[in-house]
Each structure stands twice: as C-alpha cells, then as structure tokens.
Image 1 (cartoon, one colour):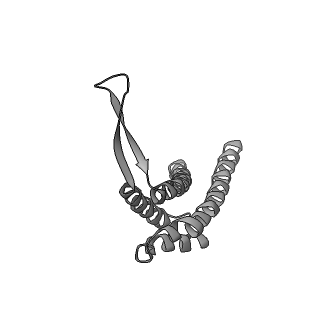
Image 2 (cartoon, rainbow, N blue to C red):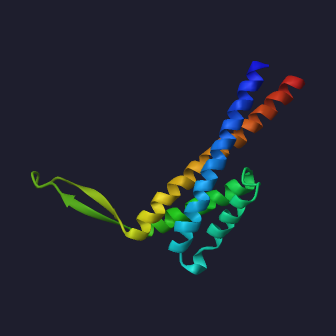
Image 3 (tube, rainbow, N blue to C red):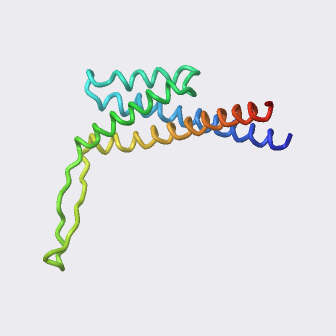
Amino acid sequence: MIEDLSHREFVLALTADAVIQARIVRDQLFDIVIPELAPHRRSLAVTVRRGLTASTFLSEDFLDELGALIEFLRIEIEKGIETIWVPDEYNVHGGHEQRIFDAHARTLAVAVGHFIDLFEIIAELIDSVEAERLFEDLSGA
C-alpha cells in the first residue's frame, strides 16, 4: 500500500510540474515565440498553444506536436547563429570557434529551453503511468 501511495504522489508531483511548466510555455508562446515568427510560420506554435489550453496536453499526440515545434524552432535558431574563429593572441596556431546568436535566435533559444523542459516532464509522466499499467497487468496475471 505504501508503494502505491508513493507512486501516486510521484505521478501527482509530475502532473503538477507539467501544469506549471505548461503555463510557462503558454506565456512564452504568446509573448515571445509567436510574435518572433513570421505570420506564415506561426501555425505549429499556435496549434501547440491551443493544445496547452485544453486538458489533453498530457498525451502522446500533444507530445508529438510539441516535439515538432521544438525541432522547428531549433532550425529557426540555427539560421540566426554565426560561427566565427577567435584566434589565441598567445599562440599563432591556436584559437577557438565561437557561436554568435542574433537577437531573433537568442530570443527563441531562451524560450525553447522551457519547451524542452515541458516535453521531458510530459514524457516522464506518460512513461510512469504506462509503467504502472504494465506492472499491474503483469501482477494481475
């Protein structure tokens, strides 16, 4: 009984984390990401924002949409990154590459970190619930 209660508490804590993170992502979408994207490139972000307002955001379907948005934003961010060579002033043959983000890429990169956090929380929650279901199926057999 105690093990069931602790698992239930774990799932409840993950659910609470997901709800909190969903609120952050919803704000990031509305305030930052959607305004940063050209109007014809906003549809996936708008779809994810709409999914966050429904109670169905803790689902595999929403997770797929969120994953697609993260990948889309990763590509958008890469477009705004310039890689330069910074020579080492003390070594003629030394130096390193440095990535410089333009303002658009920097803004999206900060926001996408929150999206990745939400993706990981939802995936862990879905996996935990599925693991419990599989365990109960095995125990009941």
